[in-house]
Amino acid sequence: MNNLERIRVATLQYFIRPVASFEQFEEQVSALVETAADYKCHLLVFPEYFTAQLLTLGDIKRPISTQIRDLAGNVSRYIEMFEKLAKDSGIYIVGGTIPTIEDGRDEIFNKCYLFSPKGGYGTQGKLHMTRFEREEWLVSAHSSVKVFDTDLGRIAIAICYDVEFPEITREAARRDANILIVPSCTDDRQGFLRVRYCAQARAIENQIYVITSSTVGSLPQVPAVSLNYGQAAILTPSDFAFSRDGILAEGNFNQEMMVIGELNLKTINESRSGGTVLPLNDSFHTAELISHVSVVEI
Image 1 (tube, rainbow, N blue to C red):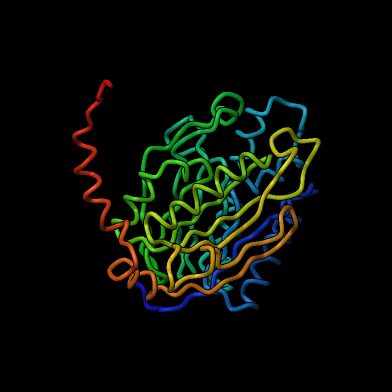
Image 2: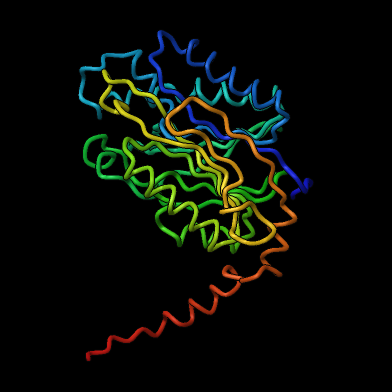
């Protein structure tokens, strides 16, 4: 379905700050979309749980699991906002994540929404919960992996911790995904580096562009996002046709920034058939090998 060879993408180091109303939150989001449009971007990525700043609209002394459930009450306004922004700007927007209660179910899911400039959206739920999500926030794991067929090519989404499970990206790449989006929210350097190192590995293993987005700043009064440590980046495979060190662009740590780069989709497709090495293609051989693993005592 891809009609473009080169696309310009923007990814955010989104500064979490208190808001006095949903309208103030919308102003911050809208300004960033307008900036991406000014730079003629085709795709803009917001990070995981950037919507947590809306918690400052409620009683932050309540149990965090209750606050997260109330945050899900903003989903309809969030969708309405992003659908309009995507149409008006002509940009595909990955709207970070927001806790969501699905129709007919009581569980809370951490869901990422991909909004099309043509109208409508698709969703990818987070598949693996971190301990604080599972044990404190009472957020449940989703169960389906999707690849989105867009005018920018096929796009997959691995939300933060999910990028640490290589099987997800491998299956998406085998279904011709050439861009992997990784919205993340990490509170310390160790957590950030787990996501970053795995994102870089996924780019190399699958000959795929990987776009990471992070929350930065802090809301000390809100335990959910009291600290944030992050850096947005646009990562590439490691081969002659791509950026030095496999990094097309990256931000400065822990500052409010928009990172912009241009992806050549033709180069990705050519690398999968004619690169120095062919890890995506050769992974089929790996699947055969690991079906016969033996333990040898010496």
